[in-house]
Length: 181
Image (cartoon, rainbow, N blue to C red; front, side, top):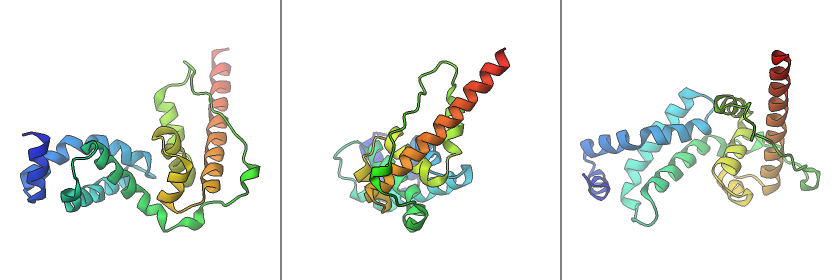
């Protein structure tokens, strides 16, 4: 069945089409939800909620842009919804106090599992901002609109996330060097 026909059948609330759509996109969307969730269980909840939204709003998809992009946007927004009501958990600071911290992840000694692990360990607000900005390419203005914070708060949380990651990478490298001696 073509994607166009699959979407039409989902609009008609066809359970088989919905199941096929779920099977086709669940793993991609789950990995996206996992980036924005505290843990595996929360990511599963976010994926479930995202598909409920997809099936309720699929008639609004107008074939402009990629369907997968539309699905990803819903998954991200669903995952961020948990944080929108908790704006108070974000630190508000003066933008002039923000340092530009770079993280060197272009190192053969760092494996992807380690990097994913330390990103997942970031405090929620830092992980959200880091993932949106670095991994998904959102601007600070877009992030501020998505989760109802100021652009300065987005920038400061990104800087703090990078600082934490830099420290963890430096510790990892130092421990790796001491093990190899």
